[in-house]
Each structure stands twice: as C-alpha cells, then as structure tokens.
Image (cartoon, rainbow, N blue to C red; front, side):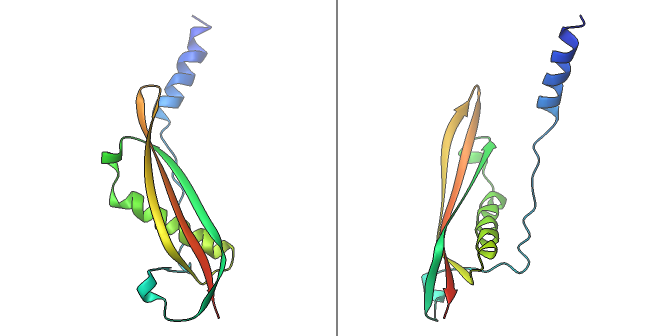
Length: 115
C-alpha cells in the first residue's frame, strides 16, 4: 500500500493538475499586416516561428487558438525590434499521444522594419 500511494498521487497530479497557459504581452507589439496594408518601404529583420501543442483534435480548435498564434508572432517580433509582421501562416498538424489526439499548431511570419 505504501508503494502504491505515491504512484496514485503522481497520477492524480498529472491528470487533475491541468494545463497552464501563459498570457502574451502584446499591448505595444507590432501589428500583423497583409500585403495590401504595406504602404511603406521595409526591410526584412528575420523569420519568426512559434509552436504550440494542445490536447484535442483539429475540430476542437477555436478562434482563440488562432488568436494565440497571431499574438505569439507579434510578441516574438517585439522581442527583435520589428515594426510589423507580414506573410503570416498558421498550420495545424494532428498527432496522437498514447490515446489522446494532439494538435500541433505552428505559426510563421516575416518580421520587418520600416525605412
């Protein structure tokens, strides 16, 4: 019984502990722009890529998940001093972890600085 109790407590912590989420500070972050919104000359600062895994199928994704992708791109662009993010791409890949479906969300973009 004494050997079973720590294992049971560990399993409870894993299953009931929940997932943590982090809030992104995007108050003053650069915007995500489309090609039509680019009216000024710019130069490329770098390519940005962010990734996130979540349990659940692709059908369980909500607009908030896609909003996270754009906010994460903006936060990364802010870290490198960019003025905007262009050419955003968000893709979702489905995997399976043991019995649970896992969706891997990847967002890419190009960080630019205006001249």
